[in-house]
Length: 286
Image (cartoon, rainbow, N blue to C red):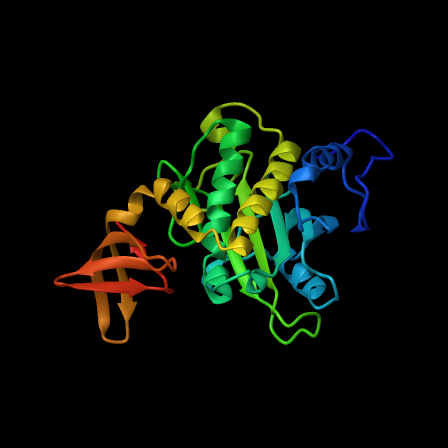
């Protein structure tokens, strides 16, 4: 998302960090009517440790909902359960935003629980709109192409803030856009948009579209349109039914077959004659 213009134009609004690259500013301006409460503030960095960490600090401030952090590179990007997120410069999208699903019109707790699934739907829709590639979603937080990881999502609650009676949530995502030299532990398990398409992808347009798509699905959450999110997620998640999974419990390893998700986003797994409801944890997919 580099720009040859020395004075990039920015859409109206407060910005910190470095100026937005010109093409990213223009792309965001084009989708501005669709952004709703998001992108009220955008902080842009060429290099940062973790966009989620910066967003969490912003979340402590007043009127923080909708603040967005974008970076060209993360040196300490992370995924779920302490995993690192490989974030080389100029090869992906690394974005975090401050959201407040707890202010939903109804069932605030359910809205918060469904935030990660809503984000998966939004990112898949954005990728499809920009590239015509239709990735699958995998419970709870991945986008896949041919069973290889394209994108990941990390939602982290920010507690103890005085800014609002609703604790904010930082929603971060990373999308592999360009080909990259993956570390050995990722080789064969990860992919990128440009690898799959065999052509270049406009990262600025994709970044703006992910924010706009997130705004639309965030609107569904706040309005209590949970069925719209669940139906869209299920239509994009072939592995949510009929896939063998295993996980470790205090009583040993468990193995079962997926049977979809329930209305609160929990994964349902058939283990013998009982149905297990998985709400968190590390699953191994076969």
